Image (cartoon, rainbow, N blue to C red):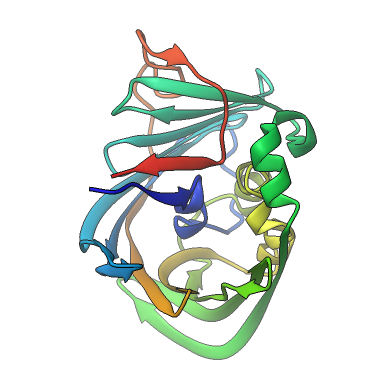
Length: 250
């Protein structure tokens, strides 16, 4: 089967597990989610529908975000590093903090991303509803993305809650660094600070070359809990590889 290019870490945006305020900075906090991605077809190739589980651990200066079985992002402010881990290949790449894309992008990627124009906006609505046990408010996110004259608009509907208990300022700090590893999301982290709460339900759609890609992500649980030993460490036996914002998948 031919390979198709996806932007990495796109899942990190689709994970948008954001926002709230109670200060639990001395403890670990864990959230779990499920994501359903619809079947997606473009240029004669079809990506089947899939369901994934995701987990995010967060402490005062460390965060780990698992997306499905193969991808993990670890942020270590104490080490001033971000680690992007591919479990299928048993490799990882590392990025110094704060992120400076001019320094870390390979020349071929730098030329491509220089052609990308992106802007983002977050709008609060007056709509509200209770999802599970969380009282949520609806936000609309729009990302205007274009490259070489081709428009790739992204829209999201996010229901965020103040009842989840996640430290909003701390999560924003982690999330800003993660999003900064992808030039496609320039300005998004700052816009997301407008959200008052942590996303409980996210509906995403992206239009690319006339084809629409859609997914839905739901928060399953959120709790304060001690992280298992090694949660924020690199897995043993993995080899380092050069960071590349584009990942090849079958």
